[in-house]
Amino acid sequence: MSKRDRAARAKNDGQSNAADSAAEELETRDDAVEDADAATSDASSDDLRPKGKRSGRGRRSSASAVDTTDGDADSEGGSAVAVKERKVKKASEQSSNPFVRIWVFMQQVVSEMKKVIWPTRRETITYTIIVLVFVVVMTAFIFGIDIGFAKLVLWILG
Image (cartoon, rainbow, N blue to C red; front, side):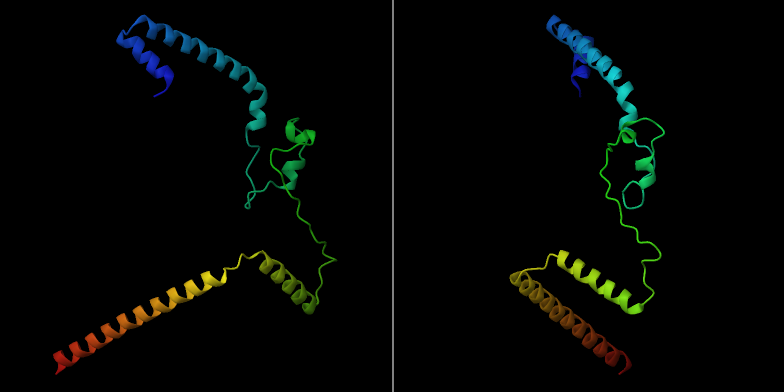
């Protein structure tokens, strides 16, 4: 419950004059803040609102970041969202040689593998033990079910 609601409830319940004066003070303070917010929000509300749908990866397209027709903060050179421009290869730069493509692919694989956070030796040993214990437990469970069904079939069919 907000201060305004408490003050209004106190005013309606007929509590002391101190509560009435506090309610009036809160109302006038909130009204003054709302008036100030309304004056500043008229000028800046367009800056805070989204300009359109974002691209699938959460980045703005280069066309919306460069659009200068509407005279807002984006057109003055600044942008609310930092956008890293992608390097676009020209069609003439792409090689049709399959060995070059494989080499580029392998370079990309190596660069991605450098970004991986590898587990420590202790974590690797712990995970290996957990996997082996799980495999042993599941093997015993399936073995037990198999023996149980075999005995059940022999008992039924005789």
